[in-house]
Length: 308
Image (cartoon, rainbow, N blue to C red):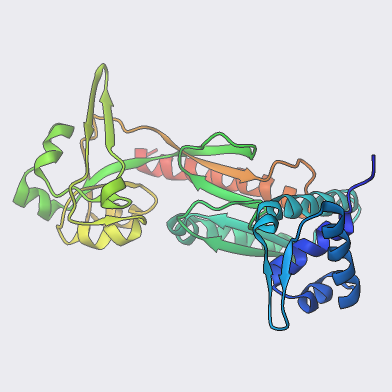
C-alpha cells in the first residue's frame, strides 16, 4: 500500500487556511512552485480538484471542504508527534491556542494564565473567548474550557470542578413583585432567559422527590450572562446565572439568591482537547496547570460562599 502524500496534504491545508499559494509557501518555508506542485500531485492521485485557482484568488472546492478537516487533523497529529518527541528535551516554548467562554475568561482566567506565563515566558497563549461552541480540530484549537453538557464526541475531556449557579434577583425587584417560594411561581415573574427566545433552555428544579420545570418569559434573552446583570441589579427581573458572574453583585447586596432550598442541574467546568494524545509539552503543561489552578479557584469560591 502506498504511503499517504503527507506533504501534499500539508500544502493543501496551508493554502486553504492562508488563502494563497504565496502565503502558504511562506508559512511552510517552501517555494511557491513546490507548494503548487505538491497540491497538484495530491489532486492527481485522488482524482479530484481540491482548490479552484484563478489569476486573482484561490478557493476551496466542495470536495476540498469535505476533506479539509481531515487534512488539518493529519498535519496537527504529525506536528504534535514531532513536538512531543522534542518537548521533553527542550524548554517550554511556542504557541498554544486556548478557547473559553466569554464571561468565564474575563472574570476567572486572567490570573492563572498570568501565573503560567510568568513561569514559562517563552510560551505564547492565544485566547479566543466566545460563547459559541467551536470546532477544535477545524479551528486549530489546542485546549478549550466549557461549562455545558458535553455531546458525545472523540474529544478528550478532563472534568475540573462543579460550577455553582443560583436563582437571582435584586432586593428592589422582590420588594415590588414578591419573592417566589416555589419554582412554578416564576411563571408570574419577569424571568430572563439564556439563549434565543425560541430556543431558551427550560429551568429544571428538584427538591427531594419533587421536580418543576419553568420556561423563561423575558423580557430579555441573551447568550451571555454578563449582559443580564445590569437588568437584574436595576430590578428588571429574575435569572439563573453562574455564581462567578455575579460574585461582586452578591457581595455588595445588589443581588440576592432565592429558591435556595431547590437545586438546579449541576454544571461542570471541563477542559477539552483534540483526540490525539500526542501533544506538545507546552500544551500538556498548560492543560495540567489549568486543571489544578481552576480546581482551586472553584473550591475557593465554594468556601467563600459557604462562609468557611
